[in-house]
Structure formats: structure tokens, C-alpha cells
Length: 398
Image (cartoon, rainbow, N blue to C red):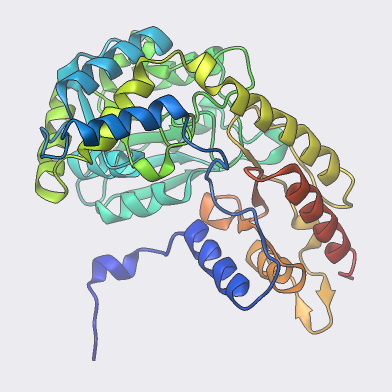
């Protein structure tokens, strides 16, 4: 009998990747599937960044690099952190990894002991909880809803802290809700952690450049907690470089060294060619490089919100960043289509996938089982057609 490890059995399959897999299978069978499940920009990497990658090949940057990344790249990231975020991380405080997902895994494996609790404000990216479990930590969910714009309050955070709390992990702009924590809100949260010096704050800022507010504010700027903040970022979302696989952290030196040690035993450095392309991205003006993509995402957000708000029973907030809408669809729980009963968001997603060939992701693995995540990283035509299909299919539930 085949028996995988208990560690593997504790993990759930990535919900986003599972839905992508089912979408591909339906497409392969000839169905016209509109996939709005994956978090990937539908734009190509800017030409000047691609050129840097090509030049790296031509210049034979095809060998091992230091585990934490090329010196020139880490210098450029250090400059980026100060230029864009007012964060002071030296080159030695930066570790470059194979995507921000590995950065998060490095952090958890470096800091968590069995039974350590990690506070997760809901909704959270699906992999947070599974990475925490992999590191033998305990995810502790702090609830939110569409009615409070999917943000948790300082009071909720305070009431969730126990003697076992080791970490607080969040994203802003948030995947999946698109919510953005303001400077004032982050300062209030920092006041809570000021009184708990053994708790570390992991700030996932991968959607920094897809932000429709006036300012992206990094919690690491706040003086009284900055020595306990680990800032996670990368180039996948803002620079449309998902396949290059480059993420990075800025962290207290001892944590950076710990992540470097972990990474050195698992993957070593990420791709040298991708590092040179990322260096070029870091040296560019992000406002110019990412502006057109951000403007297009904003236009799509507004268009899709208008369509969704015309569907009975769907409740949406107004996302302030990223490229997702996270509507509450609990109105449809308990309704039927023939012999099919919609018990939860998982059922609703499968109902839509199998009957009108639109792929969404259930909000359950994000911590909000009353919601679904819709990615608007797709063309206007596909978004309008998907909205039409969803509306028509939901109307058949009684």
C-alpha cells in the first residue's frame, strides 16, 4: 500500500491550481471555458526587461549565483525598497527566492516551531495556511466580511493573541479581496504589536503596484515595530513576470541569514537569467513601467463590478487593488437546480464550471466560505461573456 508522509496528508491541494486543472481538462474535452481562477496578469513582460534576460544569456550569466541572489540585484532591491517604500534594508538583509511563495515558506520554516500560532486576517491567500502547516505551525483565522470591506480591526487582532502567537501574516493590497490597509489602519495594528515584542509581522506586498489608492504604505515604515517586520515582494504581478519566478524579502539581518540557510539546502539561488531581468525591473520607474497595466485593471474592475452588481443576491465591496473581486454569494446557498443543491461556495463554483463553463474559486480556502474569487486578469470580452453566463446560470437556481 502506498503511504505518503503525514506532512503531505496535512496539506490541501492549492484551490486555485485545482480549479485551473479542472478548467484545462474541460477545455481539452472541447468546452468553451472562461477561466477566471488564476492570479496571473494577462500581459506580457515589458520589452526592456525581456531584453535584459536575453542579454544575460548572451553574456553567459548561466552559472550558479550566491544563494541569496546576485549582489547587483540585491543592491537594486535595496534601492527599490528605499525609493518606493521608505524602507531601509541593506543588501545583506535581502534574500531573493524562486517566487514570493518560496520567500514565505523560507520565513515560516525559519521562525516557526511546532504549535506556534500565526494570525491570519481573513481573507488570506490560500497558500498561507498550508505553508504554516508545513512548518508545523497553527493558522489562526481572524474573520471579516464584505460589510467591513474585508478588513480586521485592531480589537480583533488583540483578542486573537495568545501565549503561543508567533507571527501575523497579511497582504495589502489583499489577494483575494483587493482591500488595501491605510497608513492609519496599519499604525493602529502596529500599536497592538508594540506590546507583544515576540510576534513577527509578515507583510506580503506583491500587489504593491496594482493599487488604485493614492498611496501604498508599508507597515515596515512604522518605527516601533520595524525590527520585527519581514517585507515580502516580487515581480510576478506588477511587472507581469509570473513565469520568471522571482520573489524577495527584506528582513532583520538574523532572519535574512536564517532564510538564506534554509534556501541553501532546498533550492539554492533562483535562475541567474531571471535575476538579471529582475535587476532591470528594479532599476526602472515603476510608475511608468506598470501604469498602463494598472489603468487597464482599474477599467476592468469597474466594468465587472457594474455587471456583478446587476446580478440578484451578489454583494461586492469595491476592491482598491490587485485584480480580483471577492463577492459574497451566500444568497444562493440552499437553492437547487434539478437534483443539484448548492450547499456552499464549492458547490456554486462547480455548478458554474459544469453548466456554463466559467471557472471561479471558492472563498473557503481563503477563509471566507461565503464568497468566491473572480480574477479580472482577462480580456473585456471574456469578462462580459463570463458575467452574462453567470447571471443566466444563477437565475436558474430556485
